[in-house]
Length: 86
Image 1 (spheres, one colour):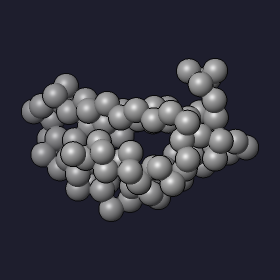
Image 2: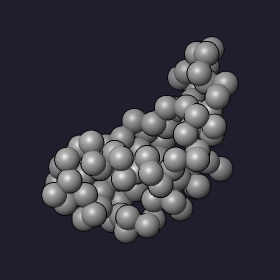
Image 3: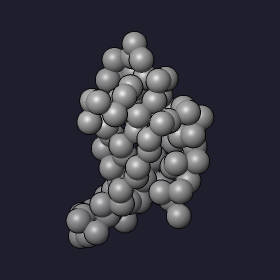
């Protein structure tokens, strides 16, 4: 499953919490849905400490790069340094 692949790749960030929700069913009929699924990522990692929101997202997108616009059409991200921020 693609959700498992996402978690496997993001394991390099040593997350203390990671959850990937497949929201593809909410986007059936959307033109881009044929190019991959829609996912929502919740991730907590000390790796994000000191990074801006854009830098956190870039770090994640770099690890998932070849999946984007192929198996992943859209990815929304909640990236935090501790679960207190959720």
